[in-house]
Length: 424
Image (cartoon, rainbow, N blue to C red; front, side):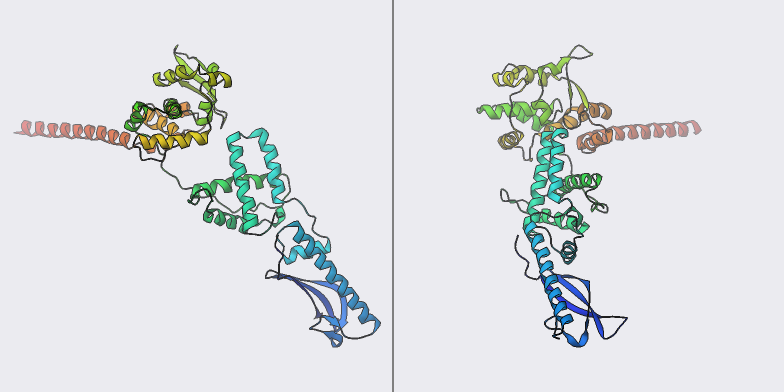
């Protein structure tokens, strides 16, 4: 850590109520525009005090004793500051004073609880989520080093202002591997994970108060991107001369007709493909993200893809229906596929799940409650998001409504015409 240049120690007498001629000596600690004073419990006559030097000018034994004690205090305070500096924590006048007086039980640090959380998370959190936590931890360390110029801080030093500064850092940070800054929801996700880490510290009683107590994450609800039927057809019909693109297309299409996420699709085993209640093939599995049981009747196109890859040497070796491929590579190749097929959307594998919810099921009249079960959602509210984005379905529903209203209008007009004829 870089040394702080604004650190200083000074001594000054304050008037004593008992004797106006005597001053009680205070040690003033100043650093980075913060300062604190503390009485060292020694008195000195004002007439013998040199304000500039901060020492007694008299040569009597008492004055010599006072000067020696001031030198000792000065040395102790500087040593306290040096300890904090070497520990790489945020240094304030209060923290120096607390260290000098021995009042700061060092306590637990921020990075200590970060690592403790990781050790626990390894046994309880899925690999993908764990990877996201590691990314958040990387940004916490980057913030400490680049913005606060420290390696770590004590948990008791965390304030609401730390969180808002960290949020601002994330919003302005531009990663070296690409030019785009983080979007709002990405920033909120990092803060949500950071909050869970600090909540662990609160439960462990490593920190007395939660700095997130008054902080609220603010997500922007984005419209779900999905493929329309003609876009999905274009991908299905495309013939690829490169095997890897053909395989990625097939895996993506499989998810479009089953709604399985990447991790659930790539981990699917043949023993999870069973005969359902109707005698046809179903997928019986559990979502790795939530643990919710999912039962999906296989549509013909999805079943054909299972048959195509189940005997692949790579599938057999891994004990899965489909050969393994990383999500990162998958998304990279999908962008190539979209470009070749003339699709001007930012395609990722998760869009297949959105496509299943919208184009394949809801648009074709599958009830919302059924779609919710197929997707493995815990709450139907999660599925309703998809229902809101299907413009074509809305258009069809409105067309049906217009027909009904027009029919009612014609009936009412016919009844009026009949009454007029009867009167005449």
